[in-house]
Length: 54
Image (cartoon, rainbow, N blue to C red; front, top):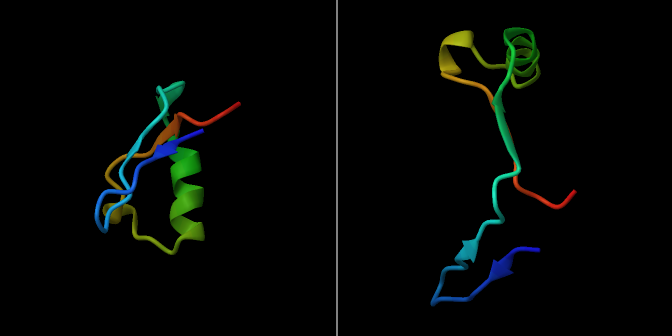
């Protein structure tokens, strides 16, 4: 669960602790580039992060 606290016109929240973060391999990045119709020069780095519930 993520706690959201109204603050004027914003909705700030505290993110849960990071569970996992690692680099994506080039073959997966290539698949994502094709799926999103991106040029390879537009992608600087690919990372997988997980800070959500299991």
